[in-house]
Length: 171
Image (cartoon, rainbow, N blue to C red; front, top):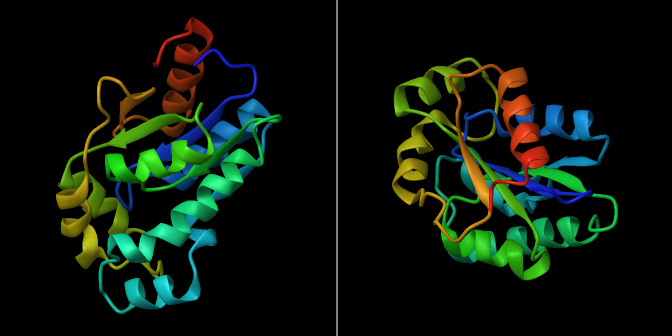
């Protein structure tokens, strides 16, 4: 993670803190941040709001948009929060941004469910959490990234990512 201008993807299931940690990371690194949720087409948001999980076909144009955002920030660095639950989704992002590094915010279903309950009005209903955990494929040994426990504070998580980056670890 020693790149001067890293492209970081903060990943995990809904409610893991991707947006909060991603924004804090971007601020500390002085690079742009975007939430991949903001790149979803309206049809995807409507589907999730109705309690229907997205399928791979729904995700394809969304992941392409996220990948293009990453590719557009190669020179400056950038942070995006994106579920990136499956290896194939991460591969699609790497098709656009080969040097992307993944920060997997990992936690138990109970901890994540509590967090989701604390954010009313979000378009991703808590009922879809089980489908997200079922789809989640942990980072492979050959994938650049780090797995962090969401039970830690945002500041601790950011500090750990930056420490690993400065040490040249995480892939």
